[in-house]
Amino acid sequence: MELDRALAWLQTTTVATAISENEILFPWIESVHVLAIVLVVGTISIVDLRLLGVASLDRTVRHLMTDVLRYTWGAFAVAAVTGSLMFSSDAVHYAHNFFFRGKLILLALAGLNMAVFHLVGIGDVERWGATGQTPVAAKAAAAVSLLVWIAVVAFGRGIGFTMH
Image 1 (cartoon, rainbow, N blue to C red):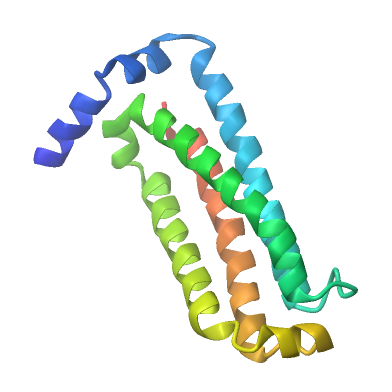
Image 2 (image 1 turned 90 degrees about the vertical axis):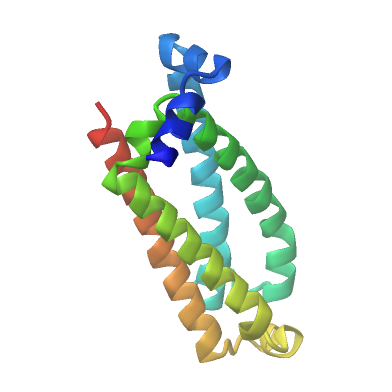
């Protein structure tokens, strides 16, 4: 299969070989990845819980999103880079791992949920965000977001337990 050949090439690159052969490099990259994911999920959860009417009710949705989401995007960039580095170290096996594939699908679902919310669900956030009366569609997007990100973390852990 062409994909497997490309992945085999990827894992023989200098960077990938250094990561896979060095006893300490992979654990450090993984640690940074986990910390970045914690920041991603934590900041997204702050916004989701506000949309659900559970937390941060003293702040408008727009203000909270403005304050928090820049950290989310920064942490997501770090998680993407570190995740890619870990993937490169054993690309063929990762690509065939059920939990890795599931995590990628869940990340795509999280992105789609976010895109739909920002394109159509956010609506007149200035009006409803100030009143604390979040529309049902925004609450649904927040609930889906929380569930999907919990699943992303669970599948990520599954990768760690099944890659040997």
